[in-house]
Amino acid sequence: MRMKHWQIVNQLAVDQQPRPLRELLEQQWLLPRRFVHYLRTRRNVLVNGHYVPVNTVVGPGDQVTLRLCGDEFRTGESSYVPANKPHLTVLFENRDLLVVNKPAGQKCHPNYRGETGTVMNDAAGYLAGTGSQAFMVHRIDQQTSGALIIAKNPVVVPILDRLISANQIHRTYLALADGQVTPADGSWRWSIGRDSNDKRKRQVGGVQAQMAWTDYQTLAGNEQASLMKLSLHTGRTHQLRVHLAHAGHPIIGDPLYNPHHDEPPLLLHGAWLRLVVPFSGETQIIQAPIANYFQENLLKYHLGKV
Image (tube, rainbow, N blue to C red; front, side, top):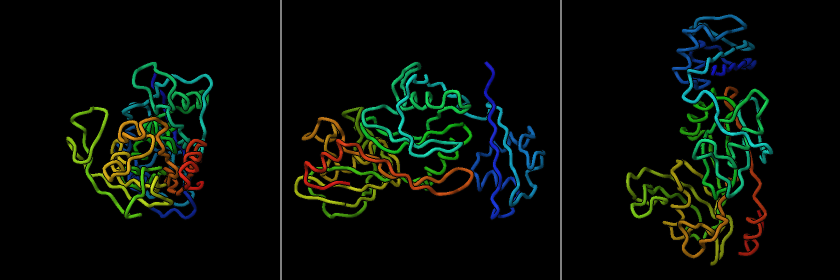
């Protein structure tokens, strides 16, 4: 089967600082060097419609076209089965990506070929016939809701990966935790590794532990529960759930880490996403509305509404 070709056309802004094309591609747009290598050797990078060497200086108003053949990517084409009737709440969309509000209980992606019912299946159905495809960028636990980035082409996947790794794309969560958290604000920098007794779980100081950093702020609280605002500096598996549990305040509804509240829904929601938009560098603050069940639990514990 013939591999899909991808083309990206960007016009540089009027305030673009003149710089060599290679610097624009690698430093400003964060394209991997292997992409730039193929663009150069295949003469597939055009400025104002013509191939130019990558040491050529480009500037305001120039049109830069990238033509990629598909073999430059680790995953050049999406293989998710498109949903016939996709259920997708889109919070932000442009040419290159979607941000959606993932519902609690839905898996982000299939675990085996042909599996359906996941967010990525819905995204594939949503994009069917548009010329774009759905590509995974990052994940959220199945029982967690909130803002999720989905790439519409493989060109932006490594760019988004680099922005996430550098913490330029930043995620902030709301959680309803057991008890009154003290001190009310602070940071947890507890390493997280695998739980040797339960392969489903992670634990502070576990097997092959890696540094994990969470900032927290108590928005409202009483002896029963605390509404927490949680900011990730790292993205370890189950990081927020493990940090809160280790602090003695596991998330209400967490079936893995809260022995007193083992019935879902897990009250953890990715409420805000600071997105750096690929190519333009603009920052978008995207808010994902919380579901009714979350609001109902806030009222149940006399913590008002968000």
